[in-house]
Image (cartoon, rainbow, N blue to C red; front, side, top):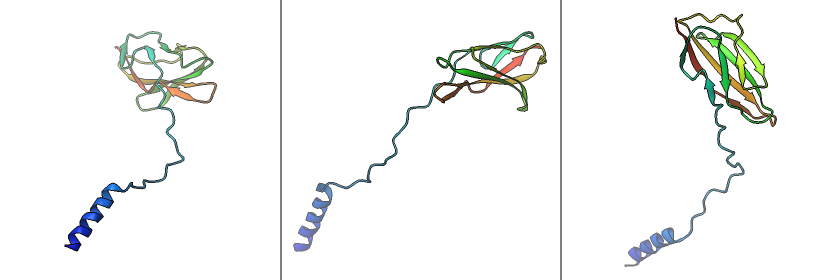
Length: 127
């Protein structure tokens, strides 16, 4: 009779006593990930007509600076430009042939040192 009573008391103590958890961490969660830069034109995965290309995106914030990069399908950089505006025009000297796929993206640097990106966008020139 003594053994079952002692076992029941041990179980009751194990359930009723508060448990000591792990000590709190000094590391705190930071802010959530930054939203990507919104692309205006050409839209992501666009198929466009041959001719001049104007890249347009939404602002990342006041006094941000931007770098626009156009890459060939194999990853080689075909053109890059640094601008303070949210528009960049591909110069005529950069020939992008019809029927080919290109990739482009915009990176923004904000005055406080934070960076944002549009992510990679596919662009195909119609034949």
